Image 1 (cartoon, rainbow, N blue to C red):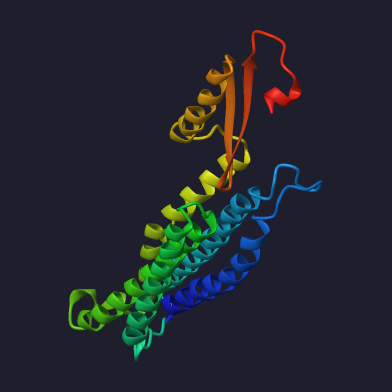
Image 2 (spheres, rainbow, N blue to C red):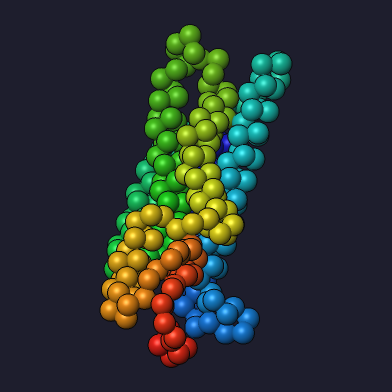
Length: 243
């Protein structure tokens, strides 16, 4: 079944990415150095963007292949119906395993203070894989019921129709992740809630020293917040006082 190939591709990608995350999770915590003077936090954002592109590529390839299969049937090509066999049982097991892995990612994300973009991205990707498994299991369970109905002609391309439907539904999450990653890498301003949380701390320090905050520029880089503060001390200050 063509839908099974998509499920296997997504599951395989998730497994490989977990290994990549294990290595990257140690890199982002490295202190700033001459190579990355502002720290390694941006590697998280770069990973999320790349991960989203990989997932979008798989979904796009699956959708194009499905459309080609459906059009071939409409033009009279002989299409062999998918052999369902134990797909439903397999799909249920894969969906349950995907939910278990996603729950584990979510639990570790919460333990880490809800900061790791790596775990958040892997949780979303694993849920996409679980949704694909559950969707194809449900669809293939229903497919045999169509044989004695006016929809029997759809059975040979049922797996292609399933893949096309799932691709259209699941494309939203990686598109949103890619948009956010590109915006962050482009230097878009931090969310207002993040900016206000930083300013609440900064203003306490500045007010205690009689320094006026003129303006600020803040942006996120992975789980870190980078910012510039424009201040008017009103009097002479040493560099140590500013630090």
